[in-house]
Amino acid sequence: MSNYNEIVEKVIKSNYCNVLLIDVFNDKIYKYKFDNNNLVEDSQQSYMDYLNKCRSFIYQNDIDDYVESLSLSALEKANGNKLVLNYKMLDNDGKYYLYNNVIKLCELDGQKIVVVLVSKTGDVENKIVNTLESNIEVKLSKMVDCVGLAILKIHNIMNNDSNFSSKKEYINSILSNMINEFPEFNDALNNNAINLYDNEKATIMIIDDDKVTCGLIKKIFDKDYDTIVVNNGREAIDYLKDNEHSSFKVNLACIFLDLLMPVLDGFSVLDYLNNNNYLNKLPVIIISGNYDKDTRNKAYSYQIADMLEKPFNVQVVRHRIENLINLYRLSNSFNNIMFEQHKELKSIISALIDSYEIDNAVCMKMIKKYTHSLTLQVSVDYPEYNINSNMIDKIANSAMYYGIGNYTLPKSVLYKKGMYTEKERSLIKMVNVNGGSIIKHVLAKNNTFIDARYCYDIARYYNERYDGSGYPEGLSGSSIPLVAQIASLAIEYCNLINTITPVDYDRVSSLIIMESGKKFSPKIVESFKKVKSEFEEMTKVGE
Image 1 (cartoon, helix red, strand yellow):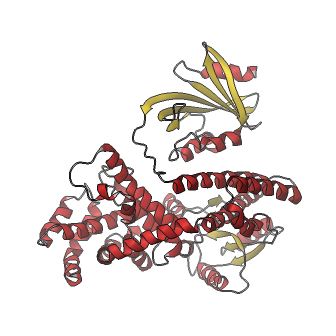
Image 2 (cartoon, one colour):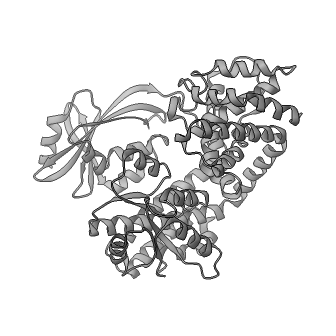
Image 3 (cartoon, helix red, strand yellow):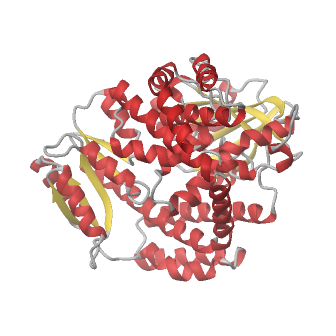
């Protein structure tokens, strides 16, 4: 430990309250603090145990960034530079405070050591809103944490060299602990846990017209997986459709996809996978050629699992893909468990969605029409957005549920006239977040007419403003999802039509046009100018 003290004493500053040392090689994390001006070791634990415990004291919206900042890959990308992270952490008094980490990767005797200097930088963060007000929400949060921890543990054991019997015994002990803490898991685990160590040979699908690449990937995984090779996007989609309706469905574990192919390219396949919920269920790996930056960014926008660079490193590819397959498999199994276990909660939220549809039937109809018309015009005016006819219908259908989060707001706040208190403003800002959660976890699972991503983006971001003064995240310009930029203008038009009496179409259009560059994207406003008369006609027909 004297070697560690030597490193710490070189980098410690008097304004840091404690120091973390992560010994990557030995999977240990050491915490140091000052005691009477002497630097002493406060505690030590395994790195994985520390990451698991983080969820209990790091604010939930900051936890992903916190964990990522401590990863070796993130620090290696920094090329020797320090990383700085601001986050909120629970203190001993039970309140959240603002903290700052300065993180640097060092080397000692050829071993990599991560040094983290921790400082307390601010007072209590008053804007944190505790949304878990009811007992059922509190319990659900704890159950989700329990499942998340189980996924991490099982993921680790599935990727080590233990024999199958040992793995199964360890997994059973994890599941047993889950049932002890939450007996409600018992039935769901009995129905689903067998999938965690199912030995049935799964299938990898390779979509590429390059025979050499297909042969190499097939050779890498031939021992553990069956492989299916198709040479273009049309063949791939036809196969997936046939498999979906087959009585002897192939168990797909992973899809390798090239972007440049004859007949139908990789992006058309990605559109199909996205519209049919494949991207959430199994890892899709892009086989990377010499793609430019825009092509890569477009591919990553589909939430693909990874992009492999040619030429392949066989060992790296096998290890990375095995990890991804196991992670998706575990996630799917535990998602099944969670959804089975929370039928009651889902039925409550489904009833809320039904109420929203009944209460807002007329408004939903008009929002759909406005959004469809405007999206079509945007697709004509700006072909660089790559909006096709199928996307237009999905965006229009998805926009109808923009206000679902309003049903989580107390009526006393929803219908209040006059100034809001600070607490009320915080509740209002959470409406978009809550709406996105309802769509992501319930509505998108049951409604085939919407697109999960479009619907989520609209509900969460339609109150953002082009100039950055909106909420909930204060996004600006092109950082606001395009579908939310389009839908927000359609929503505003509908709201103004229902607010201004008698209806003055010219005034409504003028108010929207005046917000160009402020509330709305100038490009979207220019498209609106071309369809405003169409909006007026649709409104009159609707009346």
